Length: 373
Image (tube, rainbow, N blue to C red; front, side):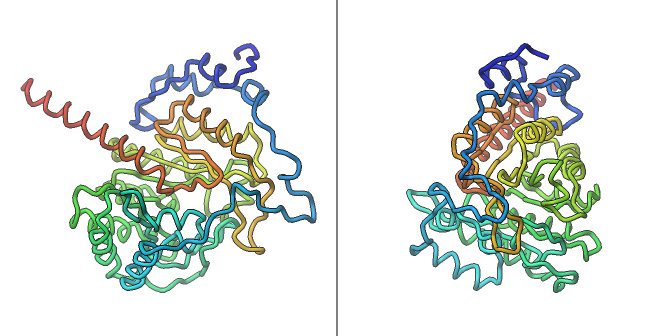
């Protein structure tokens, strides 16, 4: 344990946690790197100067928190917004943007300043077999059968938009033999068939931890394999469906990287559910130990009165604090802010650069190997 340091970022630096841990999965971390993470900064070395949440942003029993000004967004309007919605309706596609009531829908769907509009497509229907307490997606024990035309329709829609980065996500389908893994993978393959250069991020369910299902998606041609851990270990029982698991989510990300070491792996944490700083730090460390490359942290927002209540609205300066911590822990990309979501459009530029840089290194290595033979 290092002696106490009042500067949390300096404390992390003094632990010499590498800023660029190789993204080859859990097994690729050296014993020295693993030890650095295991013996990493303690709570006292981080939060002595961590920003505190004012009392009026913390929920008291029997009260409902008022939305702070930094979480208020404009009503989505504009030609691109309505065009994209019309295209989606015409192809019978569902987006997580609408189903999850994402506050960034206007920015992502509206495009602007040379940036094409885009959406996060949700496949396998709009009814989930899980009942997580934070999520507004509809729940059903026996949702309608999977639409066999959906992979092709999704590929057509993405080709029509002409975007260079697309996110595909899905509901959980525990009622299907392979949890929908083949359907998800075929969707990626149809997108790549029509536009081989588009970068695809798959925000996947946990597939009940089945390694064959994880491998099917990991080998489908996508560049980014995302799976959200959602919250800290101590709150999993409260926030997520009982069939989800903290360790299970980490193992999903680990196995995807083991199957396809070239993947960029990504996860997300919600803040404001009642977690402590110590628990958030432990979750970040656990994700890094599992070889996760990118992490996002955002504010949990209660979608309806029937869902889990917000415990506190985390101020922007606290999110900035966690962004700095993530960078010092060695994540290739850390996005942390009140309105940040796991598939937030603003992060695509950075992740796209990470993918392209790695692709360039692989090609250089391949050519060097050919020259030496």
